[in-house]
Image 1 (cartoon, one colour):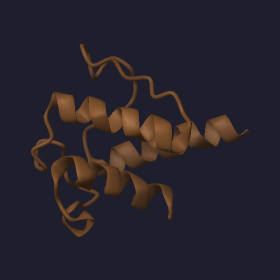
Image 2 (cartoon, rainbow, N blue to C red):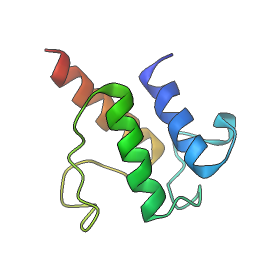
Image 3 (cartoon, rainbow, N blue to C red):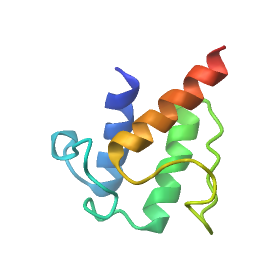
Length: 86
């Protein structure tokens, strides 16, 4: 399973949706994922990929981890995983 497929599955699970309902352009708001759901998703992503996500729940835009869309989350996770694997 690719990083994108895994991230989509995590987000879909949090939104209680089928992964096919989650598109790259979907925002967390579109998917009805609130701040608690976001934090839970981040924890699952960290555990699944064995990475540390630089995310501050008190100021989500301050850390450089872009959560503006599913595609941006996938890109951020891919970048962190690639950096870790070097």
